[in-house]
Length: 419
Image (cartoon, rainbow, N blue to C red):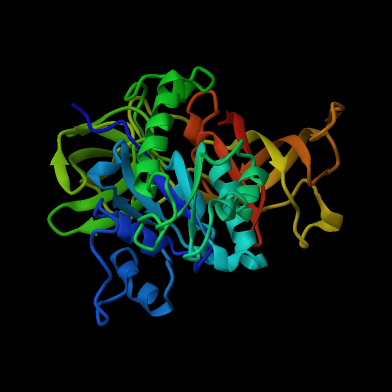
C-alpha cells in the first residue's frame, strides 16, 4: 500500500516567537516529559536549526521538513520556515506543501509592528497557497495568565485579516509544546492531530475543488521539487511532497519545465526505502541523471509529456502596491516575482484583461491600470520558465502569490495557460 494520505503542518511566525524551540519540543511526541535541559546543554532549537549559521545567528534560515511523531497522525511532517522579514520568500515553498499551519505568537511581541507585519505576511502566503486551517500557539505566556488573555490575542485579528474564517484553535504553550498549568484545554500536539484529521476529512468530502474532491492517490503523478541533492551511492536525489498520484520504483517521470525525463531508481519515505508512495508523502526520489538537470521549482510528473507554459491568464486580488510602482498603480510591464508551489520566477504583467473593485460589481475591460483592492484577470509572461496548471486541473499547481520588495502584492489562481 502506498504511504500515505496525511497532511503537513507549517509553523509560521516572526523571529523570537519560539517556532524552532516549539517544534523541537514536539518532535518526541511527549512534550513536557523531558524536563528542563541541563545548564550546559545546547539550546533545544538546535534539534531543528542544524546549520552552523542558524546556530550562530539564533534564527532559522532554510526551510526544514521534519517527520512528525506518530502520535500526531494523520500529520506526516512538520515544516519550519524563517521568521526574519528578509527571508519570507521561504514561506511560499512551505505553504504550498501544507494543509494546516501553526502561527507562533509571542505575548512579548504584541506591540512590535515588525513582528505583526511578518505574521500578517506569513498568514497571507499560507492562505493564498492552499493552507485551510490555522492554529494559534501563544508563547511566552505569563504564569498568572488567564483564558481571557488567549481569547483576546491580537493574533486572532491577524488570522481574520488574512482571509481565514477563524482560527481552528488558540491556546497557550510552553517552549517544549506542553500546556501551561492554568490551561485546562487540549495540548498543542492533540490539537494538531485533531485539526489534521478534520482537514483530511474535508479533502475527502469536498466537491468544490477538483483535485481535493478526488480520492487520495487518484490522478496523474505531481511532485513539486523542493530540493535536489547529490548523494554518494544514490546519485541525484529529488525531494518533494506528492500532491497527486502515486510514484513507483522504475517509473519513468518527466520534469517540467524543460522536459527532463528520468527513471525513478528508488524511493525513500521517512528514511525508509519503499516501492511506492502516495499523496501527502514527503519523499526522496533517486534518479540516474545529473543533479544539474533538475532544480527547485520544477515539477515531477507522470504520464504524457505536458506542454510548455508561455503565458498565464490568472485572476488575482491586489492587496497592496509598493513605492516602486507609479502613483500606487500597476500597469502592463510591471515585473514582480511570481510564486507558485515551490517555484519563484520574475513575471511580467503583459496585459490587463479586466478588473473590478473588490466591493463593486462594475467590470472594466482592458483597464489601463489596477490598484490595491482590485480583482483582475491579467495575462502574465514569465521571464524564466515555470510550470503551472489551471486551478480546475490541478489545485495546488494553480495557486499563485505575487511579491515585490519583500512585500506580498497579491494572490490568485490560474484560469488558463497558453503554450
